[in-house]
Amino acid sequence: MSPVISIHNLNHFFGQGQLRKQVLFDVNLEINAGEIVIMTGPSGSGKTTLLTLVGGLRSAQSGHLQVLGQELCGAGAGELTLARRHNGYIFQAHNLHNSLTALQNVKMGLELHNHLSVADMQTQAAAMLEHVGLGNRLHYYPDDLSGGQKQRVAIARALVSRPKIVLADEPTAALDSKSGRDVVTLMQTLAKEQGCTILLVTHDNRILDIADRIVTMEDGKLTGNSVLAAA
Amino acid sequence: MMGWLQTIQRRTPLGWLQLSRERSRLLVALSGIAFADVLMFMQLGFQNALYDSNTKMSRALDADIILVSPQARNTQNLSTFSRRRLYQAQDIAGVKSAEPFYSNVITWKHPDTQKETSIQVIAFNPDRPALNLPEVNQQLNELKLPDQVLFDRKSRGNYQTALTKIDQGQVVATEVERRTVTISGAFALGASFGSDGILIASDQTFLHFFPKRDAASASLGLIHVKPGYDAKQVATELDAYLPNDVRVLTHQEYIQFEESFWKSESPIGFIFGMGTGMAFVVGVVIVYQVLSTDVNSHLKEYATFKAMGYRNQYLLAIVFEEALILAFLGFIPGFVLPIGLYQLAAKATALPIYMTTVRAIAVLILTVIMCMISGAIATRKLQSADPADMF
Ligand SMILES: Nc1ncnc2c1ncn2[C@@H]1O[C@H](COP(=O)(O)OP(=O)(O)O)[C@@H](O)[C@H]1O
Ligand SMILES: [Mg+2]
Image (cartoon, rainbow over all chains, first blue to last red; front, side, top):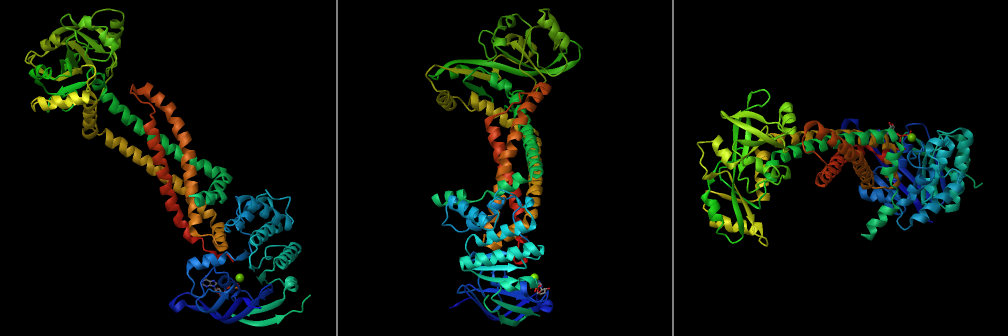
């Protein structure tokens, strides 16, 4: 099976001239389709940087970074924008649009995919919210939802377009342990159903058990790379 | 085209949703636009009213074609040309009649205060009505008596006592160039920039007032064309036929000639043009403030959209959508309020100030441009919506 994400000798630098600072050192990582990979490591070690590179939010500078068969190292802004459409993002903050209802927010995840009619978008978005347990909150605005509910709307938005890859950066950091656990379990279930690949950054030890594999980032280098026994 | 429509139909109307969720922000923007629109309507309304009031005399002339001296500048400074041109004009096939019309500024004594002031005197043969004013035409017989005049009741200044007497049918006498004249009636036309008021006299009385002026020189020639003839056509023929010491204009051209004099020679255009421009700038600033605040408060959401794969154009479209919505919504109160204000202003200033369709369309277009400029400036803030900062 060919890897969905394939990273070879990836280096990344921030800043210019004297202030130029390397944050990623010869990173190598392959992730296969359907795998759930958790990345842990101390704060400031470069986890978020790697995630933004994989997601096409930043342009990769040197090395090789192939996502779904496309080389992102040296890709232009237009290519990056298109590449982003294959991914579902879940952020630490829910980043929902305050002027949109839960349903409208989820619909924003579909609008980019031109083959759907308005009615289809509506049904799929509603079904997705139903799936994350918010079928009775379709027309609520984010302000009227709890933290856990908002994050579940964000997950629905990320997964509604059935992306090949889900990237999540500390999705439980803003939640209490119960709703954090619920959110991660939900991600796991949905990902398994849709057959998508997950790369998840977290500090939260209680959720490590959902992973197929755990990698550790330290000072810009990937160290641990342990495969967990399938549950 | 179909693709476009479909895109618009599929698109979540984010601009509208953002605006309608932030009621107070929307209200500020709409009041700002309405304020700018009201200012623009008032400025343009006054400007138009002043041009109108200055061309009232010209508009009231009862003629299809008007002959005027090439030296003429406006109704108060018409200069003169030889009356022979009027006889010559009758040689042209379409000309039905050609009558002289006299106009000059004169000093008279205010009938109430006896103070000397200047006033415009216009005169014509009372057997041939020269003005489209029924009120005047009913009183033409009075003018046939020597040294009798009609007085403009809307003249600038306080003529209350005299007007009350005239309306009661009493005789009001005063002095013009040391001749005693009788005001035998009144009519309504109104003051303008060029004159405080108007007296109407017969051609005979006029020549008494200006003994140095001879009857052979007219200020204007009023020409009627025969039925079935086109005024424009006849004017072209007259222009070719008559010598260069007289200009031939259709009535409409004559009104435009006088209006363009006031447009170029008076500060009206500049003053009110500047007022309109300032209102426009105020509008741009207010709408920009609202739109940039709105963009700023949604930067995180916009960056999220970019992270999802939305293009920058999508975000630009949101801002311009908001700008357009604001323009049209703000125009509604901005259009309704001036209608009432025009009535108040018309009462207070005696100027002919009212709403016109052309002006409403012009201000609507200005409003759209105003909001688009604000939107364009506000989109510069979108650059800071960087999806790399989202994680
Ligand atoms: N935009 C940036 N400009 C400069 N330095 C940055 C930027 N983003 C992150 N860094 C630096 O890169 C290093 C790695 O950061 P990050 O990837 O956010 O770590 P983590 O997510 O593991 O906490 C840190 O030292 C951080 O200060
Ligand atoms: Mg981080």
